Length: 226
Image 1 (cartoon, rainbow, N blue to C red):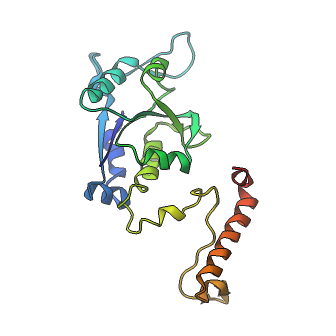
Image 2: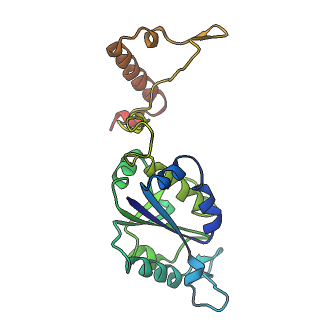
Image 3: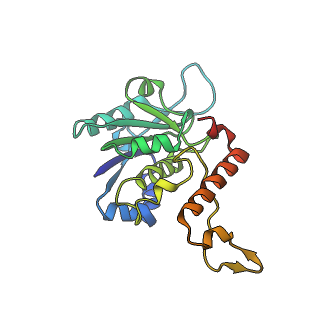
């Protein structure tokens, strides 16, 4: 079973995201255990302060080193972690290859940033991998954590009803998935391609592959170069 420990300033808000759909079923099947840790609980300041002004001046506040350090130290005293991941815009972009790699790990810590970011010393000495979900900035790392966890948890064997489903998703083979259709075969004169109705599996697979290449070349030609 995979264990994911999420460090956040908003544990209640974030935990609600995991109470439905595939993420909830994954926990119920004991495929994953997700725990939330409030960074404020590890502050030694009188009013549980976790942020301060940046040295050298400048706008915004910075998450302090000590509360994050104490939280991670406490977790590491209980088990060995494969990865300690910081979700931040200035990092490698999350993709399907990375998701596949991380989905086979056993224990992962995920740190949600806030304000202007975190003290660099945490990044230098404790974080093992930094990941971004896109070239944009969010108010906090909680939404990114939900995206990240959903992305890797659905790949764990036994989480999805049909395990082969994840293997045919977009980006698994550096191609975008082909068009998909379901009943009825004709709606308002809009027809499903005949090839999908003829029952010839080889012909269907060839059509799907050609469509994937065609679509990928139009909207993500960079994937074909890989």
